Image 1 (cartoon, rainbow, N blue to C red):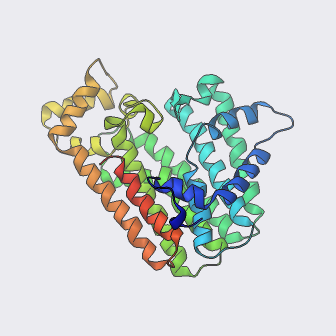
Image 2: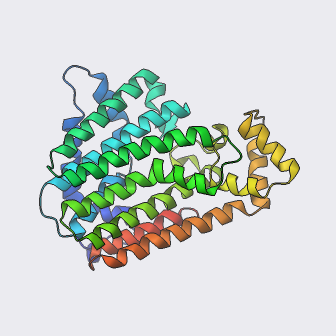
Image 3: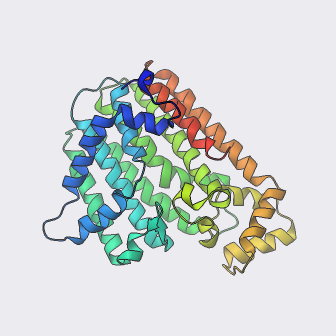
Amino acid sequence: MGLDQATPGQQPQERLADWLADDMSAVNAVIRQRMASEHAPRIPQVTAHLIEAGGKRLRPMLTLAAARLCGYGGPYHVHLAATVEFIHTATLLHDDVVDESQQRRGRPTANLLWDNKSSVLVGDYLFARSFQLMTETGNMRVLSILSNASAVIAEGEVLQLTAAQDLRTDEGIYLKVVRGKTAALFSAATEVGGVIAGADEAQVRALYDYGDALGIAFQIVDDLLDYGGSDAVIGKNTGDDFRERKLTLPVIKAVAQATPEERAFWVRVIEKGQQTEGDLEQARAIMARHGAMEAARQDALAWAAKARDALAALPAHDLRDMLADLADYVVERIS
């Protein structure tokens, strides 16, 4: 459907979902089929708990939108969109184990309902399924992009392990972590849509740049919402990043300007993990004192603008307009 048929007041991802409804139905059918297991019923149980928990399916929609925007009419954008969702779901299962999380998308995490072993092994299964799916396209470049993204995601997560609780972590390292754990799948999702459609190199690069910038903006906003959002908005408990001692962008900005007394506070709560009642509120107060939240918000806005600008190389299309609106919407959540 086109923008002229859009329901007034719809959010950009809802308009995107309406336009791509038939394709998304096909993606969901592939997901249900490929998450089945004849011999291990625990696999569809764990996978269904997360996949059917009301996630926005943003990443697979990006793949579908990129392919359609570039004029693709074949079947394989559906395979690639399902691949992207499987990779994303696998990383979520693993992340919740690493972070010892208890809530995801507003529901108890799989590791809480079952156990860590089930989450890790089902995550491995979904990674394997994603590789089966991507090979079915018969496109080596697509395989290269998505397999590289999977490696970069894992690398970003490992880098975060060493950087997250080290006050020497600066914005450059933070960006490497974010490009790994979040933006790599966004950019791969959009890039493979262009590649499978046979788009020219300038358009494929534009799609990569859009996904990269959108992913970075998305993660910065998530970091901000952890300190200033609500559980309903972010689908997890607010303050989780603080409790997990993660050096996210607003904290990094506050640490960079910290007084000796404030630095001692950050050393205690982040590096040493000695957190007490009221520390989260104090962290928020310190960040407010230095304008760290607003500075991070400006960074998110700048990345969203880069995402919009990248779309200029792509053909005029309702989908291009929706992708541009999506970049704006991602950061409007913190306006």
